[in-house]
Image (tube, rainbow, N blue to C red; front, top):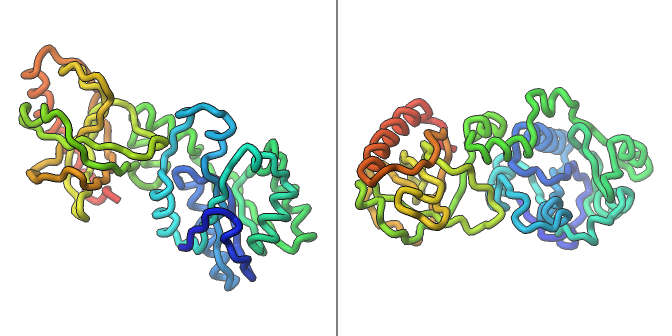
Length: 315
């Protein structure tokens, strides 16, 4: 998959099969659209193109730092799109100025002149352009004039179980990673850098790796303890992860800490990917360190039991 930062870097194609949108999460509904784009492009001897926007339009238009956290980082999204088979990903910088682009300007300047769209495939109720004025009907009306066809993925195929990025974000914000997996079609994951902590976990008999997620816009699930897979240097391990303030030891900042089962190596400075399988419990304050240690033993056994039922679910 070729990636373009800005429309000016893209060379117009003779036969482009196109879709556009933010596609945060690349969930099952998105996948139907994208797989159809790839299918039609191959059938027609053309090339598949995804037009997307960065930053996310809601981040720009709401003008609130941290207002919207995203399911995917840019790198994660690119990896998923590559696996689906998209040929070209065009990332258009989204600014307040660009938000004033009318639907007709978007059709003429981007879809037609810049991309070379011959077939446009969109999801049910897709809107675009200034004030979301553009619609399936307007695209169908403009298509013959500009020489492209429009195909809409029907409502019953898009969201027969009510899938949306917003619903998935809500599930993750309550720690319901199982529900998020159902809608995403894969487990939610995050990638971060292993950094030094205060080594309290080692004193408890459960050494942990502290994870720093560099992308501040990445959504972090609700506080609590989770059964997870941990992928490091291409090898996947079982583990349990805590997100939270660590109230029992009077923590003063939110941390992401993972205990990798049956693992004893120095891994500071390495990148690690955490794949969430199930939330085990809330983060709670215990009376003392001994009580916390006993609970961690129970959490470990619970996590091992959960993960043994999901041996193939660490993609």
